[in-house]
Length: 232
Image (cartoon, rainbow, N blue to C red; front, top):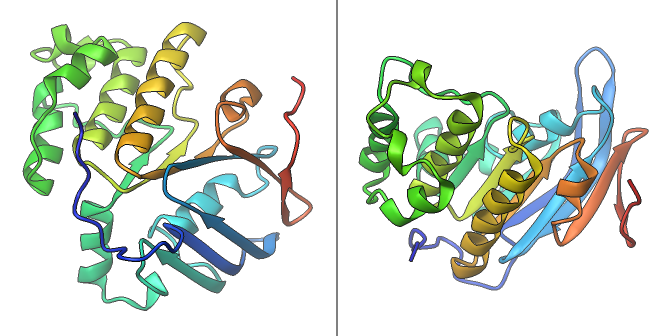
């Protein structure tokens, strides 16, 4: 069984709180976004390319301060007011980020990539998890020797090895077929439930979004929650 890190949040407050977030680059992406995400909850953010989904994920996940607004994570208020060391510590110990690109170390074997997460967070590698992901047989292979789908599953397993309290995912199953996507997402949702964690997914995939507890759409610089399932 996967156990989460000891939590910073000693109250029943949301694991993620976003207050009046705004961001722009050349153009305004979104303004005055408010969002609360509780333990055992998963949300999906849909939107066209360039709407700001990935930027919003970055704002929420310690990677990019919003131009305006405040982010609270796991009971820590206004994370971007923290020192760099404390922010990096939060990112290392409490947050898991599944990138669209795998960011695996190509000079390492699959197992050595997992060891990096294990050593940094002082967590054991869960061999049962790797078997569930269908990658236990490729651990001795170099990254360049395994398929794109295997790399994607390995990168997700590396994130779960950290035992994060909050998971952010940007198109987490883009290289996987439907059956494998369903199996991988079930493992992630089981982890969230067992560890009272939460997850935010940015995706174009409506079927993937519908697996989550809530669906939001980022459009016209605002984030709107859908009360009904979206037809594909």
